[in-house]
Image (tube, rainbow, N blue to C red):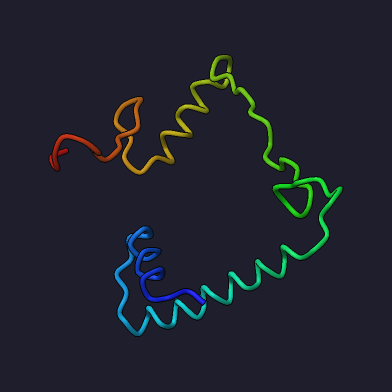
Length: 104
């Protein structure tokens, strides 16, 4: 079982401020977790390939597509986008300032 000083060190490394009551609670909980890992270490894992996931994942994000703003409907498309903007300003989007002060 972890002692109070080990829990305090873990809390310090995690930048946590914990009370003495929490120290004893976490000591018990962390000890249970470490005991579980000891049980896992007893399993025969020879010949088992290391993995990062339990199941295979594939990329489900659509591919990037380039959209041309040139051509016959360029002005219509541009205007439709500007019409949906909260604060269009001419042919541009007006956005809140994120650097350099509060004034617009």
